[in-house]
Length: 331
Image (cartoon, rainbow, N blue to C red; front, top):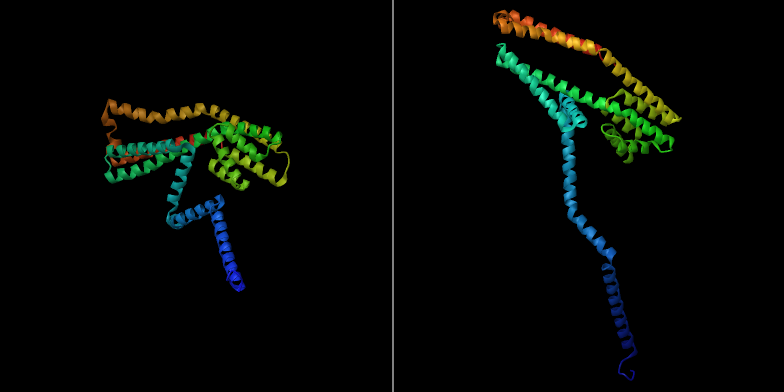
């Protein structure tokens, strides 16, 4: 035993114990320091936030999956008429927004009201008037839809050559085609600028260029834009000077527009004469009814007269359609 009263083995045991305590305290201090570091705190907050929102995310994914499956099932069960109406609604919203839908609804209500009032005035039954109103509403909506689409495409054709000229200058300056499309969407007014912005956004998101162009061609529905899509596809596959090709296409589109305007000017007199001639029977009927109603009673209040009246209306309407078709230039 040493002078201090402790054996050597006791000293070694005490030193070992103190060493273990010091190591444990050091480990705990290091662990606390690491846990209190900014990176550790950020990681812990991230884990806590993920653990909190994980159930909500899982529930949302499940709801989205169920909604997608239900929508697919509903689309599979829908008839072709429902799908056509949905596609027409989306096209009208794209080309004219909410105002276009209002015009279509107003056209349907106007024609339906006129048809119902006319049939009731002729003494037809309520059921026949209701059926006629439904048919008339569908016809009125179709006419209004065609007007909206035609106006949109006409405005697009008016500004499309300017978009081609801008792309020609950009390509000749060494700008890539995608950047030229984005620049056209940024610089040009709607509807041309809007369509090119949609294409530019899709291309920047990494979508295939051919798919983007095909979707735009279907959405716009203009043959001149289809020529533009074909030119870009051929240039991608075969190469060659894109600026010269676009310049020739711009000249062709401008000449096609001039031909349309000349055709409309040359057929203006014939179209006006056709409309005047179509109004003559109604003016004569109104005059005879005003001068003496007995002359027109046979047309409105007898079965044979009503058949003659419907036949006359059908012939006048068919004649107007034929004249309108002949006066238009086919694309």
